Length: 486
Image (cartoon, rainbow, N blue to C red; front, side, top):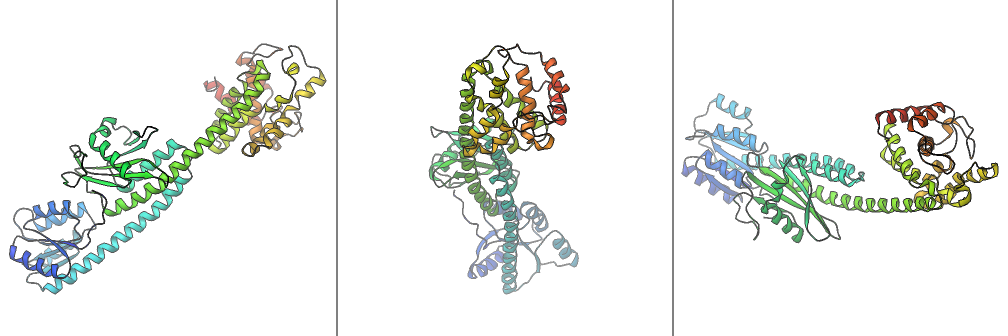
């Protein structure tokens, strides 16, 4: 069945005396309320589980399960469901016990029907206020959650957070995200708990209901024993009380579905649960679509950068793979140094592009097997500035220019192109400097063979405080010793 607002004007009258049930029910019906009757607490439990009851009027003394037992059960099942206790044998102790257990009010028989009507109306108004307060608190939490989702740009992390928030907000026992692939099939992307076997979600009830939701683009609630399940959808698996499926859709398309399940030993989903998660699903759908677009742009961005790097390496046969290796070292170094994800991304791309300026250096110089002349070395030394100028003309690469320009600066000020020193050298360029030098020393060059990593590390350590930032050298030593960079 599709989501519908609960009937807050439904009242359940519980009394083993049928005449009392009939009189009270007739009076309340004339007041515009929808009334259900139960001749005992056991029957009342069944009705509360299957109907949207807004208030319970129950006698205390009944055969079997007493009114007090029913009150205890109700407060565990739905703490906001108001219960008005009635009894023909009033005592102060009984009244106090009922109120301590959470009864909304207490009536003694014989009672005036007008008094019952007044107390029930007050109880219904009180419940509405409680639910509105709960909704408000959840809306505040929802606002905070959507802010988190909107700032998450990794699709795996976003999916995980969304599913976690959804299951917690709805107090669901199980949860799953399914996304539509290119052939319109639903693929299981994430489950809660993560250890839950995928066979659980392969049940035809979940699959068919999920397909129904993607086709109709509206939420669906399926309850055990319900006779209003859409055609073609099997009954829920054994042990399931109810489950709800929300479409994840944008104005242009349906991305997939969110499944939430409550087991038989849980309470049914409340309307507040459904309303909140429905809003969350709508917000998350937009975030998921935006993150996918962002990731697509990032992928194209990286392809463009790799294309630039390959253009340089095509001129210099000895540096094939150099930029990729420098990029890997910079990533590990930046992570070890505790940089943010955004900073790591920038340094990663700068590592790929740090030698882009060599595209303007002649192949004869790049591939010369012997020592360079001072004039030839001066040509080589132009590549950081040339590279910075090249990428400065590309809007999405412009922020990388300082790292590319200064990756050959020395910590003591004896580097090039500007001879700046210490903290004046951009931090990313100082990281690049160590990664670039180590990778170059451990790779073959036209004028020499690669060095063993131990010798290269000795040189890096020797240049600590002269060519390289001491803190970055220390971090790099930690990484190499643990084998992370190998």
